[in-house]
Length: 215
Image (cartoon, rainbow, N blue to C red; front, side, top):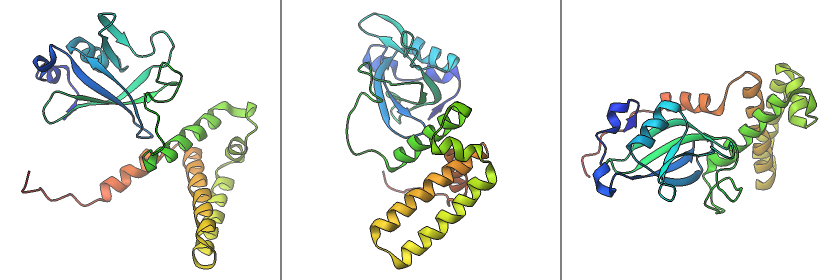
């Protein structure tokens, strides 16, 4: 259940863990799990009202907004609760590393969601776009060249993917596909659009799943 109003919070199963519920934080762009903390009702209310993920610190015995000292806040995108109403999930945009060790996530592993690389790449492209003339990277120069050049590159890479698919090996096809995806993200940024906007269209096209008759 998506939590949008403060009154929804009071109905959660706070009594199961002495007023605290675990909350997993997930990057709303890349899908990577970032950290876990605990919220009491006040922390959940503060998170919803202020738009920044806030926990109850069991060691300090007070509310603790992630990044209140470092500035690496977690900007809330969506707060939801599981089917038993005793575990929270915060989808958020991280501003800097989440872990106190200076890493992106409190979990280090090699297997990440496929969308992670696309999300990470899109975030990098957006940063290059915002940096302006001081950025001498290929991405920044391509964006500065204008939408026509960006669109031309997508066309060129699309042709190269098609040729690789019929006339070259798997490695060539994979490399050309990576180039195409990169340039597609660039052209979306050039038009102030995002990967999320594209997936929203895909979600609208998807046929509704039939209700399951079994648990």
